[in-house]
Each structure stands twice: as structure tokens, then as C-alpha cells.
Image (cartoon, rainbow, N blue to C red; front, top):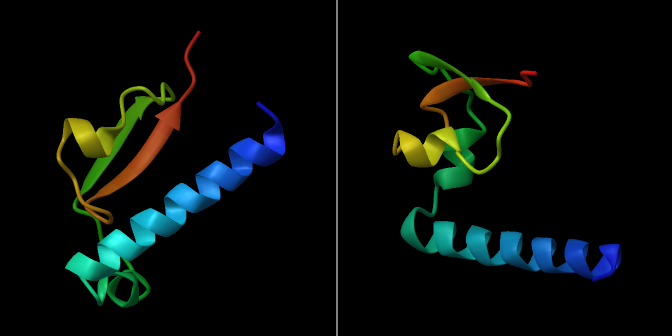
Length: 71
């Protein structure tokens, strides 16, 4: 698959996600723009197959995330 097609698919998926978020929470992006104050620091692996938001059922802004690459 060409890189251009991959980027086009990613952009389309992002647009669909944005629309779905706005349906459920119309002020989601406005609230996010006001800043963040996470109460926890998550130090995790850079393995993208295990996203901390899924493992912890965290919402955007719940965690400050640092991902590290280990040997």
C-alpha cells in the first residue's frame, strides 16, 4: 500500500473519530484547549500495541505519559 494511501486512510479515520466525539461531547475540544492537570504519571514502554489509555480506561488528560524505549 502506498504511503499516500495510508495517510489518506489515517486522515479519514481521524475525521470520523472527531465527528463521533463531537456527537457525544460537543465541548470536548474546547475543554481540552483550556489546559491539563493530570494527577498521575505513567511511565511505559514505547510498544504501541499496549496503549495506556486502554489498559487504564483513561480519558484524554487523565495521565501524563512518558514512553521509553528499552533494550
